[in-house]
Image (cartoon, helix red, strand yellow):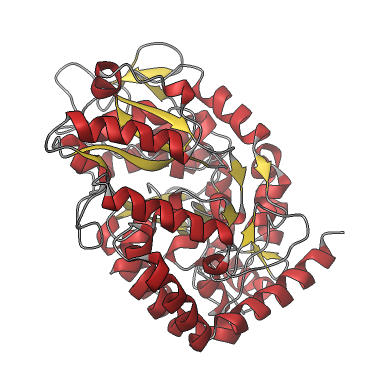
Length: 498
């Protein structure tokens, strides 16, 4: 459960193959004749949602008016509640239940699904039917989805980088005349947290981003190389994998968090807390929380907390494999219509009407235009009664074709493109670790991490005593073997990049 919660936080993070793509495509050809009328291949599109929209069938019908004409296929939309998604997705993949296009993510087990042969390799399909995908996607982003040199999913086009930062309540920032532009380091953050502690009774200065999530998942200075069991500090050019928990930076971080805890700046029950930071801020129990930064984050978090928020980055934005593979689309190995699935996926990167139907629903019913690219709710419609309040443009192919909701900067997507362009690219961008050779050690190390990491990173455990115990436990569990295997795979991958 803790692992699933951590995945969902980033955020808001995770299918696939061994069989031959060529044979699968050949076998499916009889099922994908162009046909006429309703004798068309049906693509079952499976994705997660906060809740299943009641107007899903209406939106599906509108999408099919386009799909039947443009790709001679029809779609079925199958949203699954996000709380059940991992279980249902894995069940569909393992039982060969009909699913033709599936939202997959590194946080939900992408590389392990590849190792199990549950997703098709997509290289040939993208070359043949995904020309618009290739046109709009940076090749580095497509390569980031490759495992052992083959692409098993296509990342969505959105913010492809993250900058560790902090989100704060604007009312208290204004009240205490806090200059957000001067916040650059953890020491700067600490000074502000002390101001809140001294003046706001009952408000915890900084609260967890998500329950069960390690702060270093959000505030980080390293490429996690998938699972943080062996990381690349500072996205280094020498590609040297190290144990995160033995680094000086980690030791300094947990000592800082211990200091915050002892000064009453953090949540005392952070390791058992079940509320996300947005909920704690919304209920006036918290002032701030760490969060990945991107264009539009302030409005996004203001909407999530129902109160104005201000945000600032503490480090530069960086693109890693994990950042790119957070949201992708794959085709299950069991699909009988992979060509049709790829054709529809290609539409999601090229057809503005398809993207906005998936993202926002039907114009005039679920939204109305304010300008060419800005929308709002129609009169009498709000989030609570909207029949298609999916609000998931980040997942629907090419986000840059999506309308911008009122309140956001109309130039949001231009800003995001610039954000992506200027982000540092990790030297290991495109590397995906296959943990199957060390799966026993991964399980053992995960258990040790679960025992110590949260307590250390929230300052509840004394690092002088617990950090050495943590490191000793990791070594006994086999972290050095994991790091050696990861280094071996990384070195092999690096040779293919020259």
